[in-house]
Length: 183
Image (cartoon, rainbow, N blue to C red; front, side, top):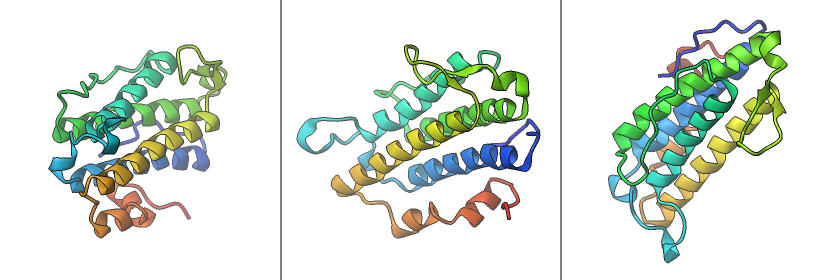
């Protein structure tokens, strides 16, 4: 479970860092409920990433953000999309999410860090650290989580309804992450 170790300065900063942890809990729900036969199944038409490759991409991109935008934080180990297991991926995503939460909490709480830049890609123009970084990170995870859910269904292994609905029960997810739901 992702834990936030920094104390953001404002309520909105705290909630944004917590929301990223809840976002990762959604990834964990997908992994917990994914049929193991879908993990390395080839996408329909033979083109595109496997589910293993999609989730390893999410983790490895988080590492890139951390390396470029928060070099003071220790990087989690990379995932090899050809060899990682669902269990290894769950653990790696939890670790990279915890580091990303730390990066967000630090950036949102510390005005000096706010003046630095979030580099989403090595070549991209830097963005101001803070809300834009948070929005991009949530959007990236959500896009790939949606791909995984759609691909699992196309492969004949749809997620159970409890998982699909479970991803949208924010009150419960917030509590599972150990937070008090914002009012």
